Image 1 (cartoon, rainbow, N blue to C red):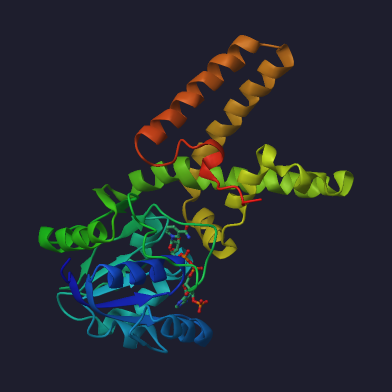
Image 2 (image 1 turned 30 degrees about the vertical axis):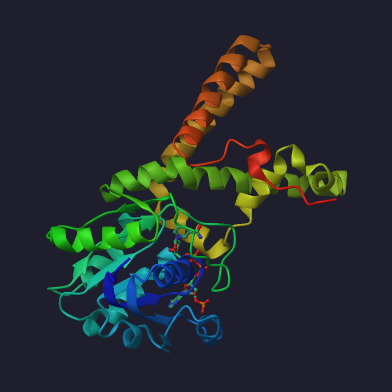
Length: 306
Ligand code: NAP
């Protein structure tokens, strides 16, 4: 593949940024990659692993001269980073982000984008429960969606170029507006995370009663909640603080459904439960048919050889 951006600056060097850097290097999509992270330890790690060509102690130095600046910090830190880099952005450059929430990022970042710089917020729908510069890998975005939310007045060529970068990293790209994005993600990601956190929290309280049984018999379903509930606390705190409206809306609907199921169990309404679970099973089939998960038993977990 050919170079899409001559110089890319990554602000934040955790799971998403390091995966982007590995992918850009593997498929030759960037001429050079500059990076900045808050701590010296992360900056050193990025150089040691080699996914950045240069690292800088400030975001401003990293962003200077870049053709593409990627904000890959927690959502709550985006505004301050944008304010810092703003006077140093090159005319004609593109600024994007990878934040899990879009309306709050647009509100925090857009006021700092100077005339002549293109701001195209984005969100790759890919991740793991691991974080930090050592957790990234080049294939994270393969066959995953990346949603772009171009802001008013951004030239079509700038969006097409960013799209080419994501496609080069293996992603499928779609465009949508910020509020629609936040509602869709509240259903598909944010509320499910909240429910997983709650279920693991319930088990944590029960632990005192049941001792180690929760861990021992966790394969019965609880284990899959714990994977989601192990996600980065800073990132998820920021998601709920910034996607408040949509999450509360979906959580309200969730609570209503839960009460319906609770009532069906109390009344012994087996038909209701059976029909409900039949509909939910069809959704799982749709996800597999769309290539978004494996149909292998137990989520394709490979059993350790005996
Ligand atoms: P991560 O692995 O925890 O990395 C975050 C990085 O941001 C770290 O390098 C951290 O530096 C840096 N950072 C934090 N505050 C900063 C600041 N004020 N200035 C400069 N650097 C700062 O996080 P991630 O999972 O890559 O997430 C990054 C973004 O992607 C978030 O907005 C998140 O919502 C979004 N996202 C995450 C996922 C996912 O599943 N993880 C998926 C899609 C999108 P230090 O290491 O030095 O502290």
